[in-house]
Length: 501
Image (tube, rainbow, N blue to C red; front, side):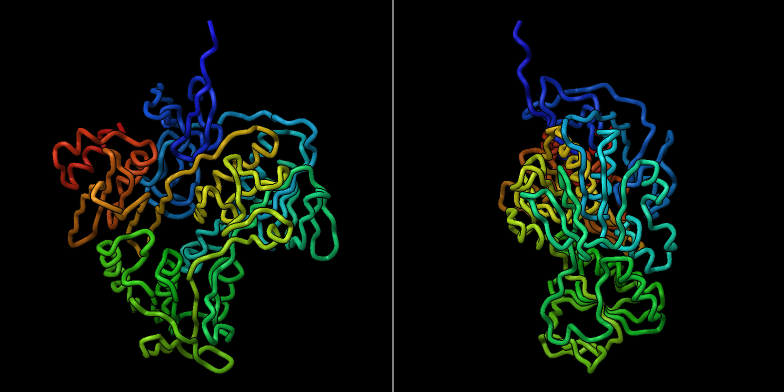
């Protein structure tokens, strides 16, 4: 009898692609069970497994226990933001002759890559090179640190003892000056040379500072690193006039953190509503009510013309002629991948470092993951995809040959004491899409369907069903029976609850 034909099975949670006659029992990258793997058009059923671990949808913290915690100890999210997580299977090294692997970047992608490397091989030499002086930390918690919700000691993801136990070399304040792919070497500022067999670039991104006149004045910063947060707090913020440029996730959380510290905060958004990439107009305007209730002055359609002052910033002039006085400006207008060294080394770079489905760059011995990596034209720029890509890059550096198939982009965050969750495509492109909306005094929700599948959603104020929505979008749940009944938002919520049981 001939062997069963190999098929491709894609994990709907993290994008890992498995090749074989059947889906694996568990995803080796994120630990998801068999039933979330997709084979178009059919999906393979699988028996459920007891849940002993739970992942926070907000910060990806993993809790061990029969039930999720009441609140996430890392980001403070409620228990209903946790999803079941099945223990990963142990990986074996797939490659021979790989003795030294260097990971550049101390963010979550780099840390995940280093951990995956050690899981895959007990003897490979691993070095993690980080430009920052601190241990790898939860970057998404910088605004909670800025707000005073957590102390600096709660920011690190792993302690130095973990690196020692795992025999992973951690180089702090080590900046790469040149990549020499043909020589398999890295050059550091200061002249040190590091040889490697495989290199994983997880160098992250840097804040994008628009070319505003006056942007070099004192009192202007961004919030990307722990040093940035320490700088902002070092000058004191209580009773100061603070202005945030950019009404995206980071701008909102920064404004909320400063307001909680007692600052007089103004938030500028150049678009007509907040978070235009993640929210439609109705949701963005509903969110604005929470912003204003927090004591923040919100200005939309507010495009910066010039940052005014002498040596220090004194105010901002807008393109419509308005001026806003301020003592501190935080610019939160997006990030750009740290791809300069890769470009200078001759690697293929578009907006980010271009990678294939195995997260391999245009040089076979160099991989990339996280904010710096561009996969199928997509720069994810969020925590969870960076962690998943780091895991896969670590496996593939040792020859595992697994694929990253892409995942729907989602944002699960607590903003200004309001729950907010957005995933997938939230704006219909033509009449083939079906949207179901609900607006009330406290919040807003939207569900977007196409071809009988939920492809996007927004939950504002009550994100209790966020894990169910996430599962439905990522596993492409068939909603044809629901849609045939011309449902309202409450019917969709009830359906998603029953579908996840």
